[in-house]
Length: 385
Ligand code: GAF
Image (tube, rainbow, N blue to C red; front, side, top):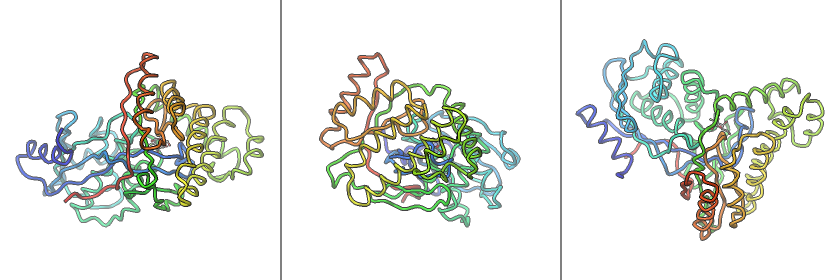
């Protein structure tokens, strides 16, 4: 298949019989560690994938927006009335309309535009295809309109689009990764202050690889389960008298757990508090150049998601267990859960063998054949030349 930027441009020319003014790209992401910590004001460590969503776009003189999607072959139109309040534009175009809505709501003079979208980020795999779309559209509109909106403020705006226009109660991680990641680095993000630290993550140099395996497990009730995990965490913070679970230090965990009323709330709390600590420990190891030593933290994160946060499914557990048995240094589910992808830290020359072992385990259990790729940390959203 041709390059994604060429496809977006060709789609634009076909849909609008004119060339675009430019092309803007934003990546999908994997989260190295720090799951369900973002909406608890905690810490995350994602990195951007080389897989990107590209928007080809051109301004127009009126407050109208038209967007074509390669995926559906559809063109959707909306005007200022339809983005005056959430809910009028639905389906995939809601991510685009949501960005226009959020920009306008924040007082930015958004230019009308024609847009064409193409993407290499797989949908529904937990690789943040929605944040990639939001970030690519946002970057394009900010650039086309010459809007005064620095990259540091863009993730919050894209998150508002997703939370309030699309209606998904996500945290700030995915939009931050899509916008603020740097090539060759993982993004250590404090989700309360939005301070970032770009932590060098030079896998090649150490002869290592991150193998990403798409479990292809159907997302079972993922939206409702995500919202219920979030609600339980907020309830736990309230019962503990802190603004968010981020405020429970790891060394005060036992005291905190003793004050919570039921096993489920205690388990959810334990995941978040220990996961925040694992993120910090991982960052310390990466800074010390000890990439291999994060392996056990990745695996511990998976156990915590499986046993305490209860967000894994049989397919992802099988992928993790098989990858570890085949020699991975560490492995975990990445993303919101209930399906999606697993990442494994492997010696680069073992990546294929680990992938083959997981595929064999899936075949033996009658699961859908998993897809896989290795990923090096790529850059965040940008205008393409
Ligand atoms: C999804 C959400 F969009 C993120 O905000 C984050 O909560 C993640 O699940 C879990 O870590 O990707």
